[in-house]
Length: 398
View 1 (spheres, helix red, strand yellow):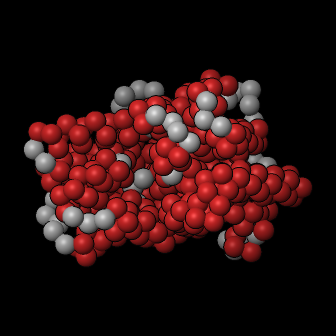
View 2 (cartoon, one colour; view 1 turned 180 degrees about the vertical axis):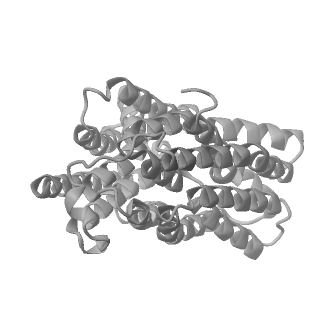
């Protein structure tokens, strides 16, 4: 990957944007709780609202990208996000805090993975998979960048200074790279520098009609991916209290949670190495099965080996999902109106991810974390069945 290539520029831009807009919340949560005097529930409610707003905006973002406004969407979202993060440093009331994060939800819907992958898929067609893999490979370290840098900035000054620096980084580093990378992809597509899309299995039938909402395969994929979001969201958001309940030492629990991100990157590296020999169908099956088995291992006990197996499978399985979702969606639903399709599919996915923390709490109240883990194993398996049905329908209509 050349450093001046569009994919390289978007990879670095996504790393900065994810670190500055998304991971800044968990990185500074304890500082907001201590300094502003609001409860953890009140604070995390703002983040849930942000993800919900992002989900609602996704279909409209997809339609804009379909119409050729990909570069404007990505750069506009980056500008809005950077400005709002800087304004966050001036917040002193809970209402304004919520308002800023709702605005950030709209911004993130236009500049995080979903719109970026829509643009890459639209411009690169069947060659999109490698570009998406490279972007997620680099941006997978966004959390590794955000947590230590936010901690250092708070130690140097305070959390207000930390968010100002985050916003400045988004605007001064992320924005120019996002603009240049997105424009280069669009220009290359217009001048036929990149490989034009070619028909694949599943392209013919869906491409004849823009009414994708009437296609059962769309709903099968949407439900399958949403169930995956529930499984991952419940486990990740409740991982530390879950491990604490099982008697895992705090340092080991934090280490396990911290290693999930690197395991996501490892999964993507492995995929790059074996993509010639592994079909997209098989890779997607692995994603669902890995998350299912990971949750089953966590339910089985808290030994070091079970915990290590959970971290590897959860990280690699969910990490690959970021790559495979747009790829298999294009395979099954076709190239035409891909932005609108992907945006509409992101709505239930993000909505379920937003509601997963609350669902995890509800499941815990009903039957403890054992019941919660048994439930998410079931949702992952059901998600796999939905995907298998969608893939089977696509092959029959090809």
